[in-house]
Image (cartoon, rainbow, N blue to C red; front, side, top):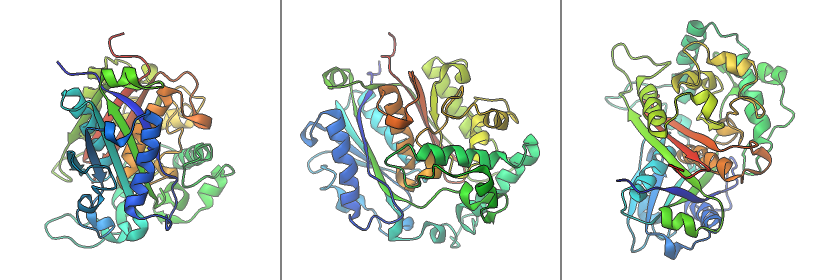
Length: 387
């Protein structure tokens, strides 16, 4: 029988386009130290470390785990690196949780980072790679046709993407760790920003950020010893599919649907829109909010944009989405998924500060990566599973 697992503490850096004040090791340690303090433990109490990192080409440093082991406190302990492209932060949390749930370790530290200023992810995603489908023009160039297909299929009005951008950037202004904080952003200013990849405009696009995140996970004994509220892990799920194959639905990938179905089943959730209080969803381009609302089962196919337009995904709505500001406000790629998972935990712990959703008891964290082919999810709750 699986052990229970809980998030004991979380930590994250402040994020910026260039963190010139720290090295990669210093960036990771900043998040680790904050997570340890939040969990009320020291590095000596940690049994294993799981490190998440996006493709090495993004920074030009091969296998950074080799030189980061000491800074992460992994000397003499198990250190495992996870890599699932942009979803890696979420996968890192799921792998760390599984080590606790399997009874292998009592406390596990999950860390993820990206120092985009050290290289150029746009370039890394644009160079021809043998035997791989060309992306060209970075991630936006790859995903823009999927957004156009969604708009055509769902009949969504063109202002939906701008609505999401305004919401997330205003939410980000409440988050002291966010990279972009724009309390005065408006629908008109988003719609007037330059078109990058039709229909994706500049203000509907995630920034390039330097940053890191860390969480401490523990078993039930560790949870009971924690000094503050913990976030209990109620369910986790990961699914994968190839980047391309005949008949693939790029707008509503099957792997995402199946991951969500497994997650809700494991958590005992039959009506996600009614039973989930807050969602941290991986939205690097604003139109992915309605697309993922449908993929995850919060709305029927073609109906997700109506939740956005009705204001249901705002802080006071039925399902607040990305109260932290999400990926649209902060995007250290390797850490972005772990940030979603950590922010979900902070919501049910009641520690989200100015972007706290009142009364949040159940939250979902979501990450996707590659060509919408890797999916990682978890449900965390204020209540112990089974109580």
